[in-house]
Amino acid sequence: MWEKFPPDMSEVSIQKRINEKVATCDFFLLILNKRYGSLEQGEPLSNTEREVNAMIESERKFIFLTYCKAVKEDKKS
Image 1 (cartoon, one colour):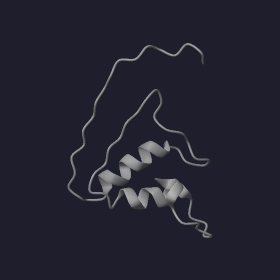
Image 2: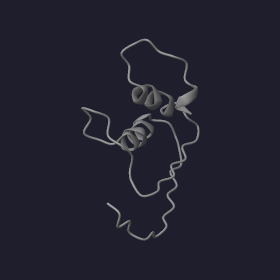
Image 3: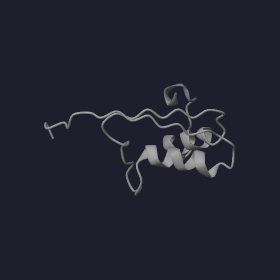
Image 4: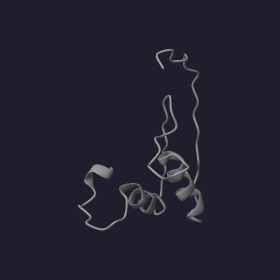
């Protein structure tokens, strides 16, 4: 969990630190709800997509499982 990362006084963003950790994972479980992550300022891809890419690009062997469930459209937005 990113909340447990030690304080970092460098210019490295928290998302970049998360992506570095993701690239070393033995397991990667991705659970999505109604959106595919948020955008960090100045980044064209969502943080979630960047995490998935970090795992894929890590050259580690992994299994990627996807579970989908039909949900009703949220008409509040």
